[in-house]
Structures are given as structure tokens and as C-alpha cells.
Amino acid sequence: MKDPRVYIIHIRDCISRIEQYTVEGESAFFEDLKTQDAVIRNLEVMCESISLLPEEWKNCHLEMDWSGIVGFRNMLAHQYLGLELDSIWDVVQNYLPNLSLAIEAIAEEFWNQ
Image 1 (tube, rainbow, N blue to C red):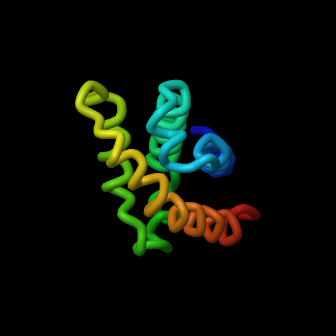
Image 2: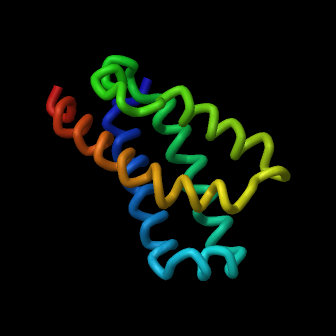
């Protein structure tokens, strides 16, 4: 098993990339296929890394729907033909900021164990 801090790094990297890719806003996201692909791929990698975090870490932040995040990853990976861009944008705008806060709190709590 990998050191779980590696997954924190992956998650942080994905969040940062998604933020960079979407900085120009909603209309730019909807108009650019490459941006859509990049955001979706980073969401998928991020969710996979979240699924590999220790349960002990996630249990300290029950405000997050960890199982929903894993389910979202499965949808991204397996139901890609049925993805709704509105839903992807909603996740980026309304869920990613809180997830980022939770991941930073987890890193602060568990990084030096």
C-alpha cells in the first residue's frame, strides 16, 4: 500500500488543475471540449485518490459525502456517454471548494503521522 499522503498530493494537484482550467468561467468551460475533458479527467483521478484515503481520515470529516464522491468517480469512468456538463460544472462550482477545505484539514491533521 502506498503512503496515503501520496493521495493527498494527487487530490490537491487535481483540485488545483481544475481551478486553473475553469478560471475563465462557465461559458469558457461549455465552449471548450479540451477544458471539459481535462476537468472530467481530473475529477476522475481526484475521486479515485479519495477512495484510497484511509477510512480513519475520512471519518474525521463526516460533513463530506465520501461514498457519494466514490460513486461520482464510478459515473465519470463508466457512464461517460451520459455525462451532463451542467452536473460537472455544478460539482466544480458548488462542491469542490468544500472538498478542498476538507482535504486541507485532513492533511493538517494526519500529514505527520
